[in-house]
Image (cartoon, rainbow, N blue to C red; front, side, top):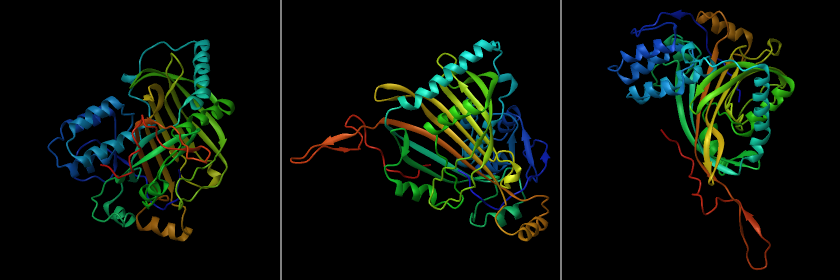
Length: 402
């Protein structure tokens, strides 16, 4: 999902330190982040959250290291700041020390792995049963780099009383998602719209089930795929391939008030991590780059999507299903006349149009089988009742969670 907005700027880099005041983004490695947090346990939660938000990782923070760091933080604000920082890093390479030294497969071995993956992708969506799950989304709003407090207050006037942080959690929603006949659906779409679409700053991503895997079939047919590396994921060793493709952009709008972008060619790239034994997809990233002549958005990180998959038991059977997703959207200030934008840039000393960052952190859980039951009344033909079977608990009502 992509939206148009006016906002922020890119600034320079400052050396790593937990100083009292910052005016630039701190680019840090995973090791430097761990060192900084190790000396910051006594800091007030809000101040620590602000200082974490001034950072930006140059390497990917793995799930295992994130979990370890999160346990060491005792406040909700600093944990949210760490979550946003980790999510931003998900499209980067892992630290070199975390890359296994396994031998690179031969050309024939790579082809065999890709064949397994394509066989899995072609069959996986069709094999998924009808099920429902709980999707919990933390929505973040902010900027890709640090800006001045004064500019932040002017740009985010609706966020009154919020201390400056580069990325701010604007809400947490929890909704029931149905996967039925190969399509995402919602048992109570009205509540979904109320909880996810009525946030003026919210980005709500979708397509984590069948859409992302179907997208890869298009990449395989029209793009280029080559070997990248081995890496260790939450479920074990993964074979990672890198891909590139130029495909026509097909936008899916998720909310009634959402503004879409024009259709046209988009440069895609990303990685797909697979189980080398059976080809099942365990990690998939997709990065969109709109050609410059389209005139929308920055050319890097315009619409980044990650989906991590893991084994889930549904109706007594094991399936590979989404467990986590991250969406990041960066948008240029394309709304408003050029004179207005130039005036804003001069007022705040900007050398280019402002950029806004929207980030979704999504987790999936509580998977249950969804069956249709038939209720027959005298003189009537059977009418399927699309409700969970008696063997599965009913889907819980959507409600915000923290």
